[in-house]
Amino acid sequence: LSIDQNDWDEKTGKIRWYKISKNNKSYYVSGEYVETSKKLALKNYANNISYSTYWDDYYKDGYAKDAYISQVDYKPQKKQSYKGNVMPDTVKAIHVSMNNFVNNQSYIENLKGINTVIVEAKNDEGSIFYDSNVCDEYLSDPDLAVENTVVSKKELKKIIKKYRKKGIYCVSRIVVFKDPVFAQDNPKESLTDKHDNLVVYNNQYWPSAYSRKAWMYNVAIAKECADLGFNEIQFDYVRFPDGTANSEINLDFHNTYKESKVAAVQGFLQYAKEELSPKGVYVAADIFAWPIVACDDQDIGQFLPAIANVVDVVSPMPYLDHFSKGSFGIVDPVQAPYDTLAAFTKISNVQLKGIKHASKYRTWIQGYDMTSRELKQQIKGLKDNKQPDYMVWLVSGDESDINKIKNGFH
Image (cartoon, rainbow, N blue to C red; front, side, top):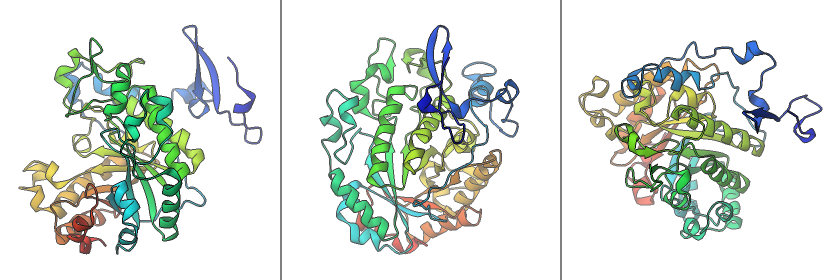
């Protein structure tokens, strides 16, 4: 229909948004996804994508191809680097609570072998741990989201600056689609029954990953974190709740645009990337380990090739105690840290080869219930398969817990 003058870059000729019409309604389409010919628009970029058809038996024949291929964008997307924001060649990270990040700076800064800290900015209870202003726009009772605030934005900005001066790369972890605060305030944007009553899954209420309002809310928080000085935004729980397949006849995900779950998750991450790129921050996404092993999305929307084609960093969670005995042919994965991480990484590497410009691969590893020796074995399993980056999951990252394994960082 038209192009706004402000959306046209006269120097490059690039157009940010096109106003279009469909079924007598007006929409805007990002210029990133507009091709110059029908031939280019119809080009198939999914030739090298492998996928399981397991979920065809639950839904219908052809479901997997439609969900993982037809609705998903595999056009090669070169990953960016930002001046003044250099990602370490090899990230060696520990996860900490906002409280520890703020109040235990000296200890964290001086951890040998660690060059990155992952900070919990928003958790799976819907709590934001700094005095965010975003809640005012998206929630009728914003106090519910910030009642557990640890630090002011002004102070947090100073603290992040201090860490970065010490050479520490700072990542803001934001839980997205597991958020009872947003869900209770926005039931029509969340997982409900057919009568719009919120439904509990995995002991919590879930915003729908189809919800554009949920997308906007979490990306607005991410923008705020970017402005505070974080180098990278890591989105966690970028998925639908697991275990809903046999109950979907009674559930309503409010799928307005009739998207597959994989398309919705990828769409959110594309939107996040577009909005955050001008801020000069990297975008990461956590992903369950089992969808990678199964080579499908496990009905939660997480399909490795679809995610790795969009974000800067993809972060699987192959925690040893999440694998059942016999996985990968290993009698007990918990007792075989090296073999388990090596076997899992080999599977990941094969799938990433199908993406021309795949995201950086940075794995979570189990820090809890581990010894320093077992931690080293996990890291070696990654290194020996050409994936040396790691992030240690210890929930809050309390000093007493870190001390038990800190000799394993290397």
